[in-house]
Amino acid sequence: MRLAQAGQFTFIVAMASAKPAIAQAVEEQFKVNVIKVATSGVKAKIKRTGKRRLMAKTPERKKAMVTLKPGQMIEYFKLPEKKEKKKK
Image 1 (tube, rainbow, N blue to C red):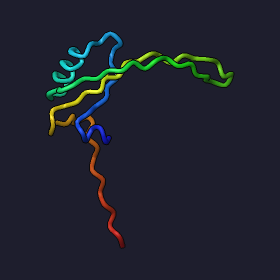
Image 2: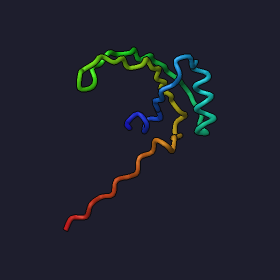
Image 3: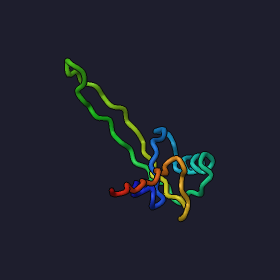
Image 4: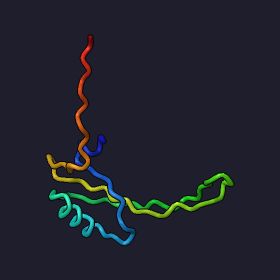
């Protein structure tokens, strides 16, 4: 959550999504101003799963790291503040 405090949020998006479309979707969905969008492709991996250890392939994904205007936050990513325990 350190990145969220700095105004950066990560989303998994469709492989065909372009940066301007991602920025527009985030602005409309969360009512914030997007400064920058960085994307990266995550390649598929082969993993073994199940009792018989069969090989399965994880899907390819695309991650989008979105930077917001300073001072803005997405409420969905906000963590509740921890309450301090009183000592007896």
